[in-house]
Image (cartoon, rainbow, N blue to C red):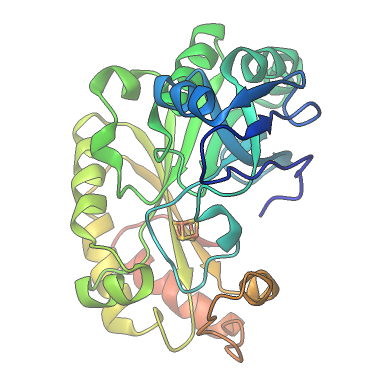
Length: 288
Ligand code: SF4
């Protein structure tokens, strides 16, 4: 996912330690704050812990996107490419006003490409107050806004928040509840509830489904995903993302057990077979 790491700060567990904010990340001038100050800033949303950011084209939404990867995620996906974003341990401390200034400077690029801002992660709704402020500020500037989420924390978004979000990239990681729990360590129900809410609002949605051989690729599971998604007429497209093992090194470096060692990417035939299952349900599915 992200290559845009520009600095790092580790939030130490004890109070009284001084933490440096990022000077070169999203533009926040270097600053120091006590852990108490940082916690207060994070609680109010005036600052957030950002893992990294990058400019991308043709992924993470339409046009050229500034994608901000937030630290923190409640899920523990077996195939996560960025396990270093799961905990609130690494990233750069960024102030809302500085991030918004950077977004403002990107506006000509967004306008020229019909792009905009995407907040991803980790999970963008984990640090909800910060994300809320960024989305509101960007929306006020007229920047197209998008979140890339599992939907697990979708209930944290108020109706007003949703007005500041033009589009949602919604990951449906499995259609089978038991398998969803095995893949993510969490329940599927909140994702479905969030999808239903987005559907009722007719919010623009692209669904993403990661195809992992031997894990998520059974016809039965794909059928269940299709049944869930086909009840959401607001879904413009469903992207089938073939699993790859490029995140494995990060798991090993972090000393975390990686269960998918040795699993190969799905074959082209397998990806097209799954796309066809979705299409048979009237879903505009594509292989990426
Ligand atoms: S939701 Fe995304 S960031 Fe969180 S564990 Fe799953 S793949 Fe990783």
